[in-house]
Image: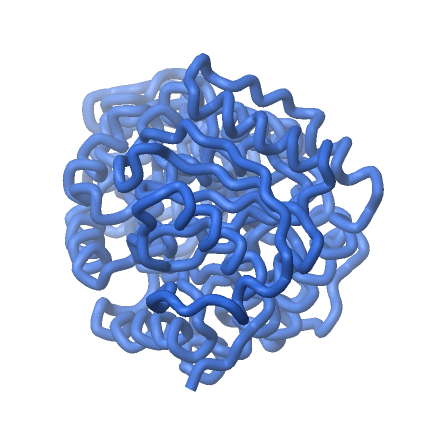
Length: 489
């Protein structure tokens, strides 16, 4: 039985990561009711078989709540690690020399194996090597064929198989591992909506993933490497959306560099019309505490003021003690920020100039007309979702009702700012378009009697990429009562 749930009053989307604390059907439904608009399935943890019931439970929400659901599968990407030590761990003292080599023998306080040929090929004197999430820092002093001689700049205790970051190198390493290829094929087979690619260093890294996806899901690039920042525009040209992965960015870069980079990535994504997610440690203290710190609340609010399409919870909803409370808190922060009278002006600090196309011109006009005539919603008819993305880029002050005959398009818009997707039959005429737009605005309680809506579509109908119609209509209020035609679904 469908349980109607009202459209979100806020425009920014909330993306919740699922995990041990939240992967049952009951908890997933609670997270949705608390405010989650989309769900992240982390392929780094657990096997593929364990993901099947989770994906089924997310899709089960569609029948329960009568709304398309959105699933993002996040691929693990390459993991760089040092080898093992004879004693399990060693202490590295600041100022000491330390060697990383290709020898598989257990390490000691003077050396350890580095089982990544690509690092030896890319290393150069003065490059930094960050160990254990940046807790220890080595500086390369000499590069030999199978040895890197380093000096310990920040010491500490280094144990078996700890992670390694190389912020000063672009590695000749593919972004997709064999595990990632298998996980990607599984995710596509399961019908997920978005696939997130880790370890993106250059635009070429996205090409193999794009080919393997074959148009069956949208591709999201995680911006977590300094080398990706240098080619940000090129990377965004090759993907459908981006994530500001602040965790790894904060390891490979000084922490004070991350906030301006976050703003730059969000601004670039908005300018190029790509949905952008701000992620990592947004409400970190809520892993253990039922309430966040004031600084965390301010951090989430900043992402909303900047106009991010989505804000993401990681361990807070996946493995924390308060998953529902974390989602509800994220929802309430976003709601409060968007009610701030200054929010609209701040969101439009980023100038999004339309491309010289009819579709872009109409998207900008739809936003301006909606504001000028005080419309209650913008209703767009779309097959591919491109019309909705264009309108969302303009950050209108009213909800965007996305009407599409394609369920995959409806699901993918779950990460799109201000969108409320409806999977519905296509229309065949201008009159039918207007009538359906009015019924949908009423049915989903996004407009009422006497209110105006802006309708955007393409003629001829059922032709992707033909957006060329903009129409303003007034709702009478009896459109549902008087309708005797076929079902809209």
